[in-house]
Length: 545
Image (cartoon, rainbow, N blue to C red):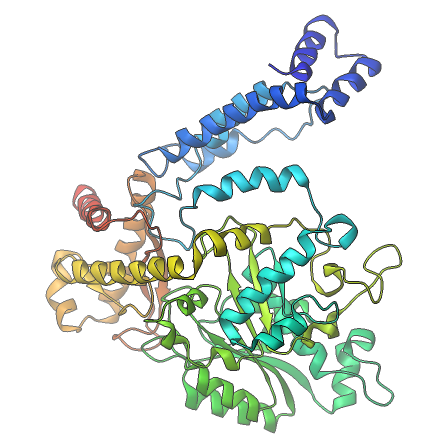
């Protein structure tokens, strides 16, 4: 037990209703003390946490049986405690109420979301990151990690754009260049890309100081437009709705174009949409291409979209939050041909780069594209400084790019190539396994390592095999799959997510509830995949659905 914990326990026992102000101050100082003795005591807490992590990661089930309402009741007290609590006492509460009931995301049978197992080294590096507590807003608070972050962003930029050595020598550490921005996730990365697109499109004119100064209404008047819009497919990520809202376009300023039966944007419909926007004097700020949709992993024809965007004078952004790491694979990077033509690209570190939550990157083809969002303050991020906070939506933020830098070095390009190709191999195995079971119907062929399918009750299997189900029958099967997925979550043995598709062989506009599997955990085996399918069959039989 630490000195601080012992002092708190004595105070709680001997002084009522709590320690004196003087004693309280002494106890609090101990919490912040830096000394060999305190490090020794700190290790006791670290050992307890390490034990909790080990117990959690070795769990066999994905969820406990406690229901959501009962769990919520454990966290219904809003009163802040008056007096300090000993650290070991707090860890006991944490273990009982939080760790025990948390979702075992790293289980090899958890194959339903874009969150997977982590390599062990990030847990170790997390202690270093928190211990140093560097703030990437400014060089003065992150002397070494600021250029370190610029380096790792350049590595991702090179992965996407493959510029020359001379290009990177010029821009990697130049304070006026921004090869990209590291943010807390793909959502902020996408928003930042559209923010840059908007500000570049509505830059200064005679009598107009730029949209960042005069606002959207003045910008539209100055440029002669009636409104501004973003265009993407019907499967565009919901972060672009947030971008349209935050940037003053309104959610209706995000135009969603229909997709084909592979989940790709319909190019002819896109062309018609562009023509209609021009006829209405609408400014197309950006056209967004998907490189791995969240629902099915679909990839838009990026090279074609790049050409269309150029002709439309629109910023071309590729949301490769999920699919970007295909670039590591010599076998599969051809799926992303045209991504190098994008004006900006988002890649999410906490997806297929296997990093903790809070890691997203947007990279820009033009190293000066982000200058249009630059902001300054006299006490920090001053004009002309190399502070990373000048060109970021976020201000103070942790140096989580350290995890990305570490992964790119420790796993390496070839390591990521192997991981990506294994995911693709196993999703093909899943597709074949589904095809070998009469109980299931494959709804989409795997473009990446996401697969959608559904359970079909026996009375409808013949019609499903022929693709001749009525709308009412499909609705009934959808209700079955909703119930099946809910029961699978409660059972805790395995997990897949669910979604609703409208681009299946049953025709556009007919919503089909699908079971959604994401194969990303390196520890997921063919036996685990078989176990998940058997579990679904067992649940359906047990509950008569």
